[in-house]
Image (cartoon, rainbow, N blue to C red; front, top):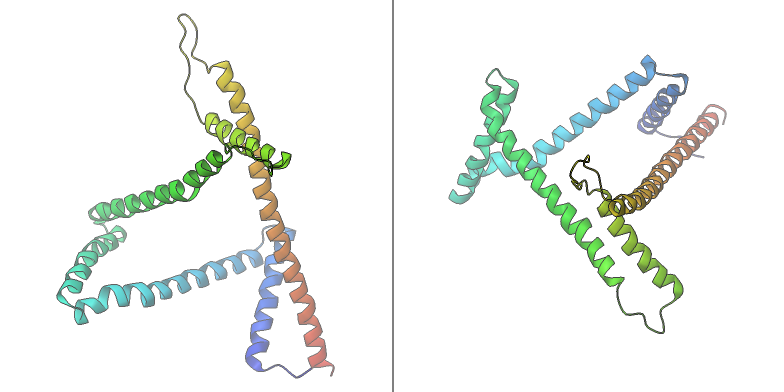
Length: 229
C-alpha cells in the first residue's frame, strides 16, 4: 500500500483522536468528551456563519446595495433595516429589535404550519379517503385490511387530541365514554409510531457506531503498515 501524504495523515489522526474523545463518554461525562463537544459546536457554528455570510448576506444584501438596479437596492434596503434592528438585540437597546424578531417568528410559524398542512395533513387525508375506494376483484384481503387500519389509525389519533368534555348537571366535567375509548386506541397508534421512530433512530446510531469502529480498525491497520512496511 502506498504511503499517505501529510495532509491525509493529519486528517485521519484528528478523526481517530476525536472518535476516541467521544467514545470516552462511556466512562461518564468527562473533560475529554466536553472538549470534543465544544470543538464540534464551535466548528459547526463557524462553518454556518461563513456559509451565511458568503451565500446570503454578501450576494443578497450587501452587493445589491452597491451594484444592483433601483428595485434591487430598494429591496435590499428594506431587508437591511430590520436586520440592523435585529442586531440591537445584543445591545442595551434590545427592545428596539423585538419587531424584527416578531416578523421572523411569524414567518417561521407560518412556514411550519403550511408545511405540516400540505406535507403531512393533506397527504394523510387523501390516503384515508383513498382507503374508501370500492373494492374490486383484484383487491386482496391485505389491501382492504391496510385501508381499514389507515382509517382507524387516522381517526382515533385525531380523536386522541380532542380534549372537549361533556357537562352534566351536578357532575364534574368528563370526556364522553366513546371519545375516551377511541382516544385510547389512538394512544396505542401513537405509541407504536413513536416506537418505530425510536427504532429507526437506534438503527442509525448503531450504523454510525459500526462505521466509527470500522474507521478505528482501518486507521490502526494503516498506521501499522506505515510504521512496519
